[in-house]
Image (cartoon, rainbow, N blue to C red; front, side, top):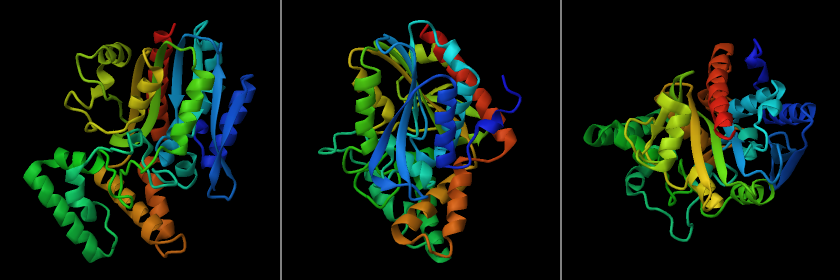
Length: 361
């Protein structure tokens, strides 16, 4: 293992993509690039969802590694993917098995340092029946306080007072659930699941048709940041204790495992998640899906950054006097750009991937 894993972590989306493609090519792998048809990156250039594969296309066992589902969180997952390629993961894939690396699932969010996509949609809430989406009445009751249209000091104090009152009456975790479970009625809000199937979701279908068509046993890891103590990690799953998928995940990731439906998780149960979509795409196949969540900043710091970034893009402009400050806040909330943090989260990811590879042997 390298003594400096921090070198694998990118400075921005364009550098991340270049590093991933170069690492794949150095490993003798081709890269399939799907270009976004309607939006450009922060630098005015095209955006791509890239995949690299190792192993036979007709493999029945596979590991899927996903980065950038939440855009700005892509620094972590992209660094892990490029680092694994540079450190020879191609030679460690079990014979007859397949490894698929999906790089920058949400390239718009990655490039623009946003958690959401070009439609202000959270891709990890996007996989629902949009004709009959879930209803989040608790979010609706707090919508103006969660995502205020006014960020003056007085307005934010009033919004925060509303949220504190809800937490005092119902509990802090109930407030977290109201905010982050997912909502489909407030396009200008946060944790919005979108009004339609996203471009990224369509590309996921294509990846399953083209690159995972024969797989009957799939392990998937989706790399995330933003919840928990800085540098700590949890493997979060949506499966309840007692479910076969929970037992498989527990055997893989042990004490690190947290179920949103089992109590004690950093996250409440969510709606329209990527792991639900992957399970549906697998059909009758066996799916074990974990979100490797690594901590960054305190919860209030992350929440403040999300609210301000939401305001900037929906009510402000790139020329606003606070724009540069807000973009620094949102990036720092999900990507602590320090060597110590990078080394810690690299180790977590390396261990999680090692266990997943063993499971598809």
